[in-house]
Image 1 (cartoon, rainbow, N blue to C red):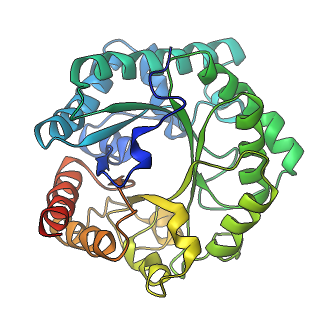
Image 2: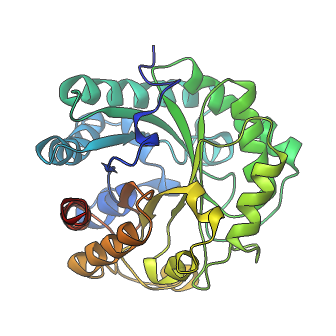
Amino acid sequence: MARYRNALPQLTDRLFTTDGGLETTLIFHDGIELPAFAAFDLFSRPGGRERLRAYYDSYAALAHARRLGFILESPTWRANCDWGAQIGYDADALAASNRAAIDLMRELRDRYDSPETPMVISGDIGPRGDGYQIERKMSVAEAADYHGEQIRTFAATEADFVSAMTINYVEEAIGLVRAAADAQMPIVLSFTVETDGRLPSGQELRDAIQTVDGTAVVAPVYYMINCAHPTHFEHLFGAGEGWTRRIKGLRANASRRSHAELDNAPNLDDGDPAELGRQFAALRRACPGLNVVGGCCGTDFRHVQAICFACQSVDLAA
């Protein structure tokens, strides 16, 4: 079973990395069609598992070569029932895909894990609706019930924890945390923000984190920000307020565009990898507790490599 479930090694200030924008890499660089943005569908296609393995292998090898920890984030962001149903998956097929994803992460962990390069497995969970827009808010109870099935599936695998990514309103966040507590799974909660640093619901990130922590019987082990550019949220860390210490991870977009602009863009904006690395380094200098770094939409190996190099330079200079 899971190696780290009760003692996650990324809870120190040691630098961990993860992968980049899986779905945008597959679609725009590899020319692979992903209905509903569902990377997990590759497990049902000839050669799909091998393509996913090659994608993750490059990032895990980078972490191993740089002597960094690595978060193996499963390709299951869309592997919940509403999104699965759109492309023909029932509950049993979804559970099988979630298990297959963790099994692939286990294979990579067993290849690269070492005392110097701990490989930690995360069962990745996405929002019920669109990550950028709130189409219909669930109650806390609805969210706990909805996401509980996927979380329970991960709890029966070798996943060390679950990560809820691109969450855009607080009721779904609280429901996810409750479902994880019921399944006795550690959870990392990652909010997305707009260009002003607020959630798509309009709530301030500080208030969202404090609300979740204030209502949770078992709080998230830490928080992250994903699917936004550093220029959208870097101002949140400038005041040195205590709540920002609950944020340990960043998975940034390559583009400075807003969510609405990205939705309407005809092509991929991959930004400037070197600049993105410098922006991560600046955040790492300001907040040494920000130690889990990686990419989101539009990023690829180049961006994550630049982020790793820049953040390691900060650590070496400290």
